Amino acid sequence: MLKKILAFVLLGLIMGCGSTKPKIQTTKNGVVKNRAPRKPKPSKTATAGNETRSSEVLESTSKTMVYSDQVKEYISKYDYVAKNNMKKYGIPASIILAQGILESGAGRGTLCVNANNHFGIKCHNDWTGDKVYHDDDSEQECFRKYKLAAESFDDHSLFLTSRGRYATLFKLEKDDYKAWAKGLRAAGYATDPRYPEKLIGLIERYDLAKYDAEVLGNDFTPAPKPVAEPKPTPAVVNTTKPVPTVQEASKGTNTPVAASGSSYTVLKGDTLYSISKKNNMTVDELIQLNSLSGNAISIGQVLKVK
Image 1 (tube, rainbow, N blue to C red):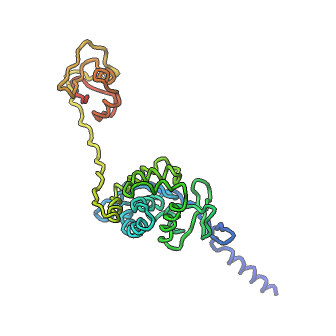
Image 2 (cartoon, one colour):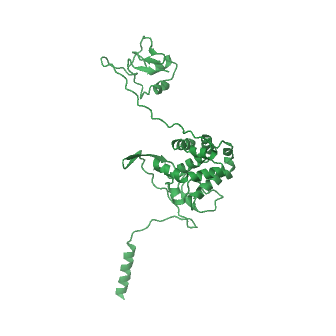
Image 3 (cartoon, rainbow, N blue to C red):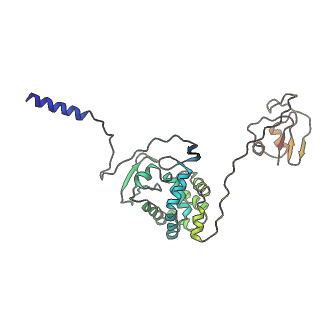
């Protein structure tokens, strides 16, 4: 009898020493509650083979870092859905895709992966489908859960067309994505004041407006891509005499000497302030026009003033 008791005690100790599983919060109907993961460390570039992949952080419900090739993959996967929904509901395909990219982290955000929710739509009072809980503006907010991505795209279109606050959007031109982006923010779709700017940036970087043109039968002209600002050319320094900075310069009696009507040659005693006043401009305008990194200038330096 004693041997049996010892055997049971030993078996209990062996079973109790295994690894423990983390506790999972669920609702009454058994839906898993998901806590937001830690934010990934941002990275500007990463190499894949011999190619350099540019990356950007998309502020989905879980801030997600994605690469440009992943964004393009997302677009090619859902462009036909966006175009079909544009034909059916009247929402620009460019707006649908841009919102999907931004809200879902190009399909890689936690909410999208766990719930097929591509547009960050919360439950609201009229939702009777499946739900998940996720940290967003507040802790553990209720979000809609879908079986398929296509259901999320359709629900997004129904969400916009069935609510009166978005009615003014449908009076806009279907190819005016800038007005739609601003209208979504004004109607309260997002609280981020930069939401329109983010949507427009995605549309123009990835030429999403071409899908609007395809649906409408219009010609498409890509938006100009931003060009990197050239680095300012270092000023030529006269090494035979000390170079005074703005702080070191003293008042002078010299009259301004201009190389042409659009430039000005710095004289002893000049400051950015005095030069700006002589040429009816602000100091900031003078700095930006000449790509200056600070307020230091040198005698003989030629500055643009127009």
